[in-house]
Length: 550
Image 1 (cartoon, rainbow, N blue to C red):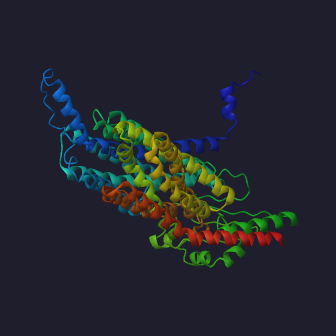
Image 2 (image 1 turned 45 degrees about the horizontal axis):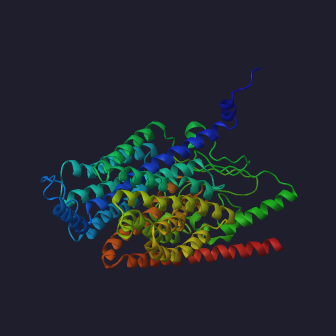
Image 3 (image 1 turned 180 degrees about the vertical axis):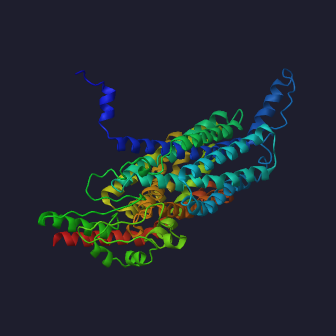
């Protein structure tokens, strides 16, 4: 018998389920990367919408005096202003550019709360496809203002508002889909790697926008708009919402215990154990209870947790019995009723992480929208070079998200991991504001470090934490809750994302140092809202250690 080719041997190393999971992982990664790719151009184009015309005017005047006899007068295109693009060529340009950011992010924040509620009642594939096609239209619409010589501020504001609303279809959809396909094992690391789509999209968006920003900035929006629209078509053709749709197992676990997130049925089967295995099982159940991390729990654990018991009493559908040797069933994802907004808020940890994300996202999005302009002002670089350099912040964000997921999996402490990175981020931002004025090399180093510490907690909360809370044991496998929980957390964070760039636009005229002080205060507030959860994690760890000793 002939030996199989190396490629075929590689394919056979993995099961059908594993290949489908890898496909969904890659597809959702690319889909949401295209969302961030389409958001990034505005931050790159800001340096072109308003130029530092005083210096350039002086250079042009000297040049004119020197070569007046040799050169002929050249007529300027009507759509080009000496100080940039009208109406952003005025002295209040920072406020006008801040209004563009605020329009997009405020619409995004409001729309996110509605998106989760709507999204859990519609097929994810259709909902996401329509959102991506509409997002492509409104992203390109902003760039068409260049080609049609539009100088009305409200045209650009309305384009930003419309784009902000339709972009809310993305995050709840992809998180729900990835949560359906992957269980809780090593979720922090898996989602930390997966969440790098945010930084990858920002990097690609920066490079694409920077390529055309100095020559034809309209294409900096049109090309990303076409890209996300094409990805919307790919989504319609290939996205599989749930593993049960193609008869795949719902989690990669080979254990006899099964938890099918949002499947037609879910069950917890606990086989008969010998004395040694029973001891291990009880140890594991205790550990999962005190860390509040399990997909299922022993009956005694439920009795000892009043928060979970209260939620179970109020549950609207399904039955649950966790006695040893009993199979548990509930209605499927098509039969369970969607969780209410208030019901999602009552899940332990949702409010704390939502408020923490509000301030963490405030910091992250301030960098997203204002970093290229800051680099232009401090390093005196043109818009293209500043856009290219700003991608280093997102490179640091990739490593920060993966590191946060890895640490949180190892320690089994999501809140403590976020708190540690937030504690380090505040002094790092102060160092960045001071060191960035010392030269390009120092700026590069601080961009990488700041990107890791700022985006690490943001990435962990929006992915692994949201999926943990959206598949909380109190929900009894109702995957339709995942979209609502994700929307609440990210929607609250988006309020901060709207405030950050707006505040930066208002504060920056008084000096960039004041902007960094604002960001440091925001990091401190984010840490403050996590203190109760951090204390609970540390106390539970001490309880478990005492249990192990006895």
